Length: 385
Image 1 (cartoon, helix red, strand yellow):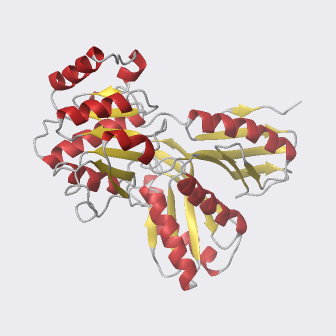
Image 2 (tube, helix red, strand yellow; image 1 turned 180 degrees about the vertical axis):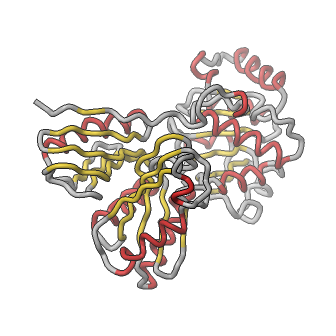
Image 3 (cartoon, rainbow, N blue to C red; image 1 turned 30 degrees about the horizontal axis):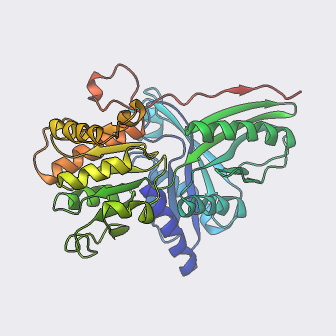
């Protein structure tokens, strides 16, 4: 997320300065690799590299291969890196990853390549996910080219730059499914006139985080989540705490009471909220307002017994959270990391939120009896009738 933000910013700067630029995108992987399909890296003719497509072992070689694209707006190319043990010495990279990476290189002075950045920027601005389908391999007489794309927005809007009708119809169906599942896929299509491989990726806007409470312990939480590229809003009812000087990195700092939340905030199914006001009655009012909302995560700082008492007091006042609402409630907030300081507590909170967002348990990787990354299966689509 933050990587894409940095790429967009660097591209704007290169455009203003008149520099040529190119973009490298991981489109297909197999085995053990550092980055997954959809990872991007911006390259400029001045030698600037923004983003990464590996752990640092492929970037220099990719830059060398992209130099012709920085000289003129030539056609996209794909390069492959086989880092399995038997081929590692051939590449001389010494990676030892035992995997395969395919990278699409494109000049950003072509409409097709530039369009993807425009769609990503629009996704961030509109705060809604989009799905982008990119062709990276073609065999046969398919009416398409490497780098051709189709974009599906959350409101159903389709922007199609693929001429092949059969492929377009198949992509529309699969792109809608990928957008609904929020999971990037690499899909192979066996068409009547050829074979095509496509990366269909979901671009997510910055995670919206609401921090209720502008105390000292909220400061490292803002700093850490901004490092991740999240959209962070701090809310407090105390004028001396809810200030821009106190939270210069926050996207918004709102001064309001619990009764004014509806007028000042928009709560969606993507919103994350953390309550850390250290004020019992204010927390009670916040829970009464936040629990019925569509939040996907609501964390409450403080001992478990305190939050249980808050919920019991709400029940005595006639409000009983549903099971679904309580499933979204995390108290005490954060993973069990042995955190003590505000910085450590912020780390524990962010780690738990990340686990929830990715549907993981937050356990130790050494205890995981499966690959670190979920598999990214390819599905063969038969010709349409």
